[in-house]
Length: 351
Image (cartoon, rainbow, N blue to C red; front, side, top):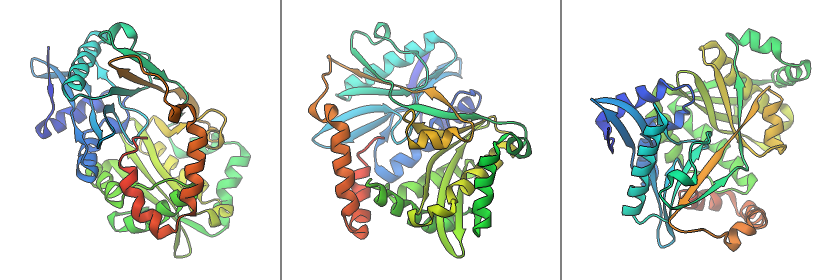
């Protein structure tokens, strides 16, 4: 068994291996690495285990460098799920051991693996300290064979909410690369309203371009005004939605209902088996929104492996309070200022 760093020539074989595993998310495709490197400059270290020229396992990693602060090796930043995909537990352990060696060589503070499986323990961390975050879930909806069957399975209240958006004069439209400006206008305004630094337009463009046909952009219009946007990424079996936004002043018209329904229609009618609504905290607002569509929670396990025992810092202990304070301050910044500064900050936030 040989483990090496994958190069651009391995992209087709890498993606084919990801596509052959139903549990894999689209973030494990090679396009995520290319988008991160092109947009934000963080370098990928994609580990590939092969035997007699055949891929037997992969572990996508990004060296997430915050100058003068920290360095982490993450699988994967800016999304819910990365982790090890392998043909056996033995190969998983080989890849993990190699990742720990790479982290050590890069003088990384930690190795972080975002997973949905209980496949890492103290026993295979080579004497390092392991912490596991379990505060988030991934909301998944099994899909029937058609959007008609999906629609008929909805409760009447949900169907009426979708019809309400249409009755309110909203219309859904699939976007092209030319629609990125409209997408980013809605997306950035919503992030500002939420008090969160926004991703750069270059990042959104790179994701859309690198994924090619596996990325679909949706826009909701009220007249000629874009009021909702979303981007979905696809594997053979799964459609995932990393970003969706609506303008608050139009939320009473239910643009989010029309947006999600069209994405769900697309997923069901193209033969996908699962729609991934993304991560949520149990019983919070986004959790309840996703649950009304029939999505069920799948536990996310974010493993953090460090050379020595890590102790919660004051920022971690008081994280919720500080986050609320930052959101309140950020939301009060002029929109142009937040949009200018946001991408330079967001680049260094791995969530």
